[in-house]
Image (cartoon, rainbow, N blue to C red; front, side):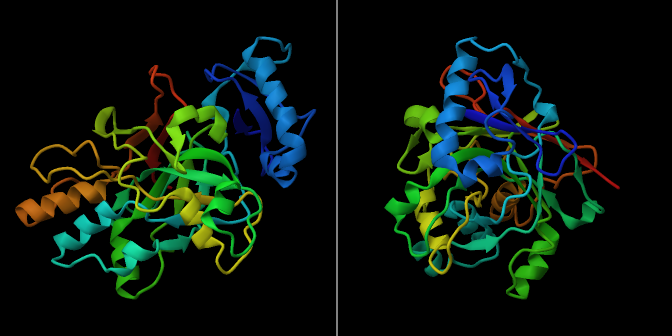
Length: 331
């Protein structure tokens, strides 16, 4: 099923069930007020939401309305905890090659992961930042929403706790990231916000695209209407979501509603001059390629007024999660 959180003026929004084609929706207030409340009692609430989803797709409801993605908050506006991993090592390999360094062997053994303290933005919310000079980058990726995961859970056990998937736009301030990395600090100032798709989707809705705890499908990104990249999220993913969740819960119990992102998608592709390769999911990757080829990057980071669009289509060319479409603004 497909779920969204509508902006009703409250902090947590209002839970709605959305039709498979993303054309209509139905408020779920008779079942559950918010997505967090549904996750807190998923075994009892999910079947009721699924029944409403079936009715909605069959046209057997009277209170449905046209679905407007611009009315959506992030599916979980106030997740109890969020973490971001770097599951696509190819981008990190390029970054280190550009600086004449090798990828540390430790990154091949366990994922690089940091807590995320940034704001969770709706799919059409502006990205409001103070300075272009911070090196503003987008990051097209996938995130999952977890149920309760006990401390020390195995990857197989953690796999069974994945309840929903979303697209993500990880905003990173690359110039600030350099300073934080030089101080061996996790990204804090450099990770101000993440935008999420208007709709979160249960794994069963994805069919064969969800296999091996990976979402297989191309994430299309563009800037100001110009195509940027379309990497396949299921390709070149060094650690799947079950492994990422098991890593995160090694020393803690994860509460229902924990959001876990895999970082910008990156597919291996020949390093060549010209436009961003199909496998690029962020500007930093293309700049690393340019540095390797020409000794310096040429592609600029985002500027005020730029609009980023991120979307995934199914085999019939229909949007699965709805599009993230965010414009960079200045206070």
